[in-house]
Amino acid sequence: MNKFNRRIFVFGGVATAGALALTGNASAALAYPFKLGIASGDPLPDGVVLWTRLAVDPADENGHGDMPNQSVDVEWQIATDETFGNVVQSGKVTALHADAHSVHVEVHGLQSDHEYFYRFKAAGHLSPVGRTRTSPALDVVGRDLLMAFTSCAHYENGYYTVYRRMAEDRPDLILHLGDYIYEGKGTTGGVRQHLGDEIVYLKDYRRRYAQYKSDTDLQAAHAVAPWLVVPDDHEVENNYANMTRANNSPELTAAQWKQRRADAYRAYYENMPLRGGAKPNGANIQLYRRVRWGRLATFHMLDTRQYRNDQACGDGWQYCPPAGDPARTLPGMAQENWLLDGLAQRNGIWDVIGQQVFFARQVDGNDAGNMDAWDGYPASRDRIQKGWVQRGVRNPVVLTGDVHRAWANDLKVDYTNPAAPVVGTELVTSSVSSGGDGADSTAIPHVAHNPHLKFHSQHRGYVRTVIGQSKMDVDFRVVPKITTRGAAVRTQRSFVIEEGRPGLRNP
Image 1 (cartoon, rainbow, N blue to C red):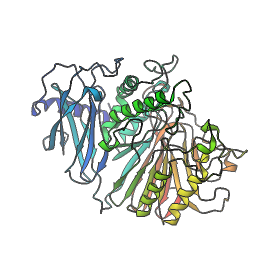
Image 2: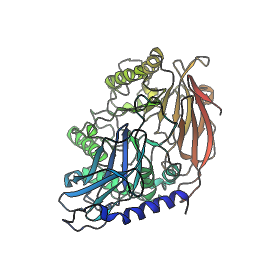
Image 3: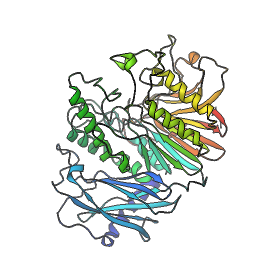
Image 4: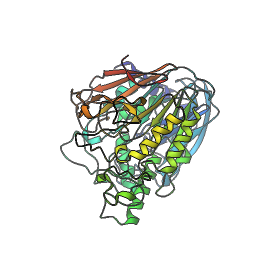
């Protein structure tokens, strides 16, 4: 048993020993209801969101985890120590059947830049213990930030070793950039198998999240640090984009497609440590937001699915050429302006843009790029890159998921000119499991046409960063296999991004 596993074991023992410190809701006898784990997210200088969802049988077909059709009182505690000898806040909330017994507690009044531990109790049962932290005060740079990010965790493709290894690094903050679940029906021949058919209705989305969240490696990653999350396409449907039509569900009417989106986003909110402002309004959900880490960094979290403007391309958006229509936008004009306004504030040394799809230009010999990425919206990318240059943003770093491969890219306003100055950096994480076992090859595809692409890996993994005042240290962490459990992790490549000098350098 390694150090991290021993620590989780101790957490569980402490929680049991402290059971009498909480007054439970004994109105209904329940089997152990914390089988989906616990989580925290969206830290502030004085608080954080605490999350759990009650389920006694995650595989239950009704999507409610075999919970009774009634409300359940859930108590919570947050302490400065993992033995809960110094509980600083506590309270009680009601987990509603209508919300799949999910709980979102927005805690305030905590000390800035501080580590805390939290737990829940329901029907006499104690949850696992989670570790979280608040961000630094807004006027303080603070200490270095250990941040890790990843994406794309197809349950059927492999085990979640990447989550476990990421948890063992004990980061201060974790970003998940989308494809937390996959919507496809269960197939035979994979490492694991989805329950049920392709998910379309609310009960199906709820059940799929419950299946994913039953994984103990995923639970460990949630328990070790607060998360910032944004979805990509598979949380709704593969290659889904904008809110106006069913791109990949022609059998659905417009009303049915709208209801599917509404159900998907409702389940996403129910299962993520998000603030109340992200609670969906029908088929719409407000997910782009800014989270400041004192004066050290500002995280601009984007939504690159809901607001795409593809009218210039007609039907079949994913096959459209990169037309020169400047009205074409990937994040939508409102979100573009919101991003540029936030970058102009320059509140942190580092401006970190957390988003989903490949940002840098990436073309083959025929000058064709990925139309389900920023290459399909070149005017939109150009406005954002020129915008941060015009606003004097010194250290823009774009974080990306989606492509199941790791990349490290220099960003340029003019990608056709190898001599053009570097104006930013993109770090692309590989997947948790999507794509199955990777390969040792690091050859950069079409490198002659993309000299700004500096690194490529086909392994599964995550990106670990240490963000400091003068530099950002970057490690591309990989595991050789995810089709069997327990693979070790290694750093395949490291880079340094120096403050005031955008681009990738060797350490």
